Length: 439
Ligand code: PLP
Image 1 (cartoon, rainbow, N blue to C red):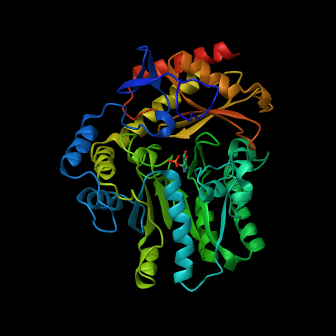
Image 2 (cartoon, rainbow, N blue to C red):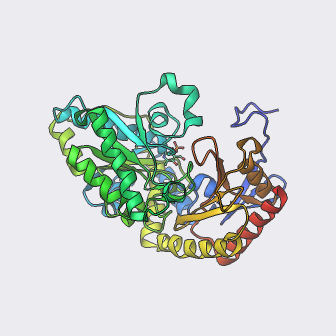
Image 3 (cartoon, rainbow, N blue to C red):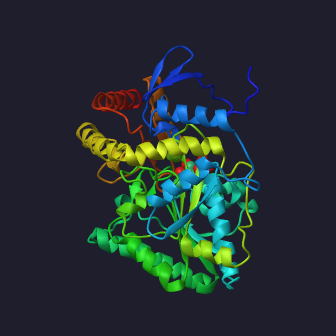
């Protein structure tokens, strides 16, 4: 008997008792290799002594002080650290408690920025189909994943969506990667013109699409074109790095691998590495200046923003990621993981595509490699693989609706950056086992 309101009412989950490195252990002592860091969260594994020590040290000083009264050393230090490594032009950090909150803050800041600038008609948000930006109402409306949105549609703000840059399924015969990227980027301009350029506030995109597509980066030239279009119409570019950022793709910010600078970038998950719930909305110095010289305050706020304990955990995390060479580990081990997956699954009859950057890797499951035909969604293939892998002692993040919110299945792998070669072999062996069990 439990009084928890669980994610799924019919499922019963084992009780997690302890974590050690890349492993989690349940109440029966069963060991699970954490192949997805939960939901791309646990980048440092489950027993990082430095992060734990930083949390304890902060608790010994002060646990909490409301940001309407105080700032704190950990928050100041973390902001300095993040800005020192941030994309060009990003000048301020607004701390929150997770990814959805970071997106909500970004949307509201974009709106308030245009009010301060004397352009109050700008309120529309354009995002992409098959994206995920969180589960609160503004973030859910911004995401493009139909099955998550449908029941709550009457409660949501109006947003519009253009197709994603999803080369595996979108590129046409005879079209180069570059041409494909330009074509799908042009959809942004078409949508801006349809809505009326002076009514659009922001375009929101994940540099590498995580939960809904399974680690899909854009093709070369795509984001450059997107930036040009945003600039032409005076629209803000918001990059959502909640899942793909903080080293997950092999650089601290995923957009470092694209020739673009966002106006706003959101981070979470790996920022606290699972040790504390924390996220951040980071904005350009120009946006901040508009607020500072305008009304003088961002009309937003939550009780736990800039939480000192969460910030000290994140400080220890970012220190390791940047100064400790752990981001580099994501790049190196990601290349090894991908190579091994290609060797093991590259010719697998039910794997159509292996993709991703750093330790953010997706495998798209198909019924037919030649035609790329997906399995019937009724078969729930992604759920069966997740279950079989978990039974085999591997936690991986699988999802359905990859193609259009209904059809398609993929597996997302996002293990801790501290994994070693033997963990890569264990991961692929267990995944093979899961495929054998399901098919
Ligand atoms: N944005 C992206 C890209 C995400 O992947 C997620 C969560 O998976 C979110 C936002 C929402 O983050 P949270 O679940 O911390 O609210």
